[in-house]
Image (cartoon, rainbow, N blue to C red; front, side, top):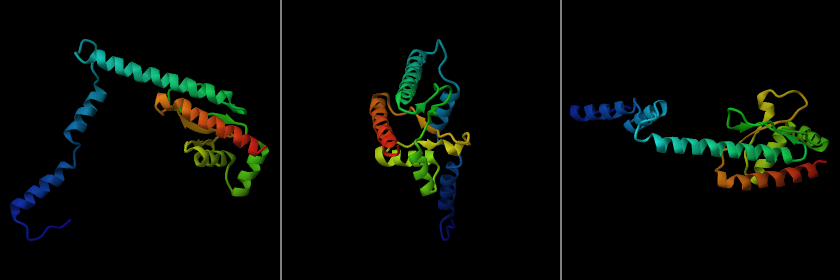
Length: 170
């Protein structure tokens, strides 16, 4: 940006204001410091921090387990337990009709499934073909990050869609 015909003091203030954006703001710096140096046992805030951290962790474990169990109960779906990431990678044995329909549309079968799931339910998953899956297999990447009180609803919508998809493309 170019400023002309401004008083020198004004230009100095504009320069100072623009320079502030070169560094993160104070709240951002404080939050970063807290993330890399959380409260330690003996600190006044440690009990609350520990309670919140454990609550979040336990909720994530429950959601992951609930999602994997639900996926494994669906026809033609198998999914390993989630370990370390916030994703599940279910394998889906798609019917020949789905594979043919995907070919006609110039899509991989898992992409067809993912797009139809998104259209029908608003649930966004990532086709496994984007991750270099083994030839002839179909996978999805999904997450268990919806709030815990919404997981049953998300799983129900997925299950209803899956059943309809499998029947449609028998």
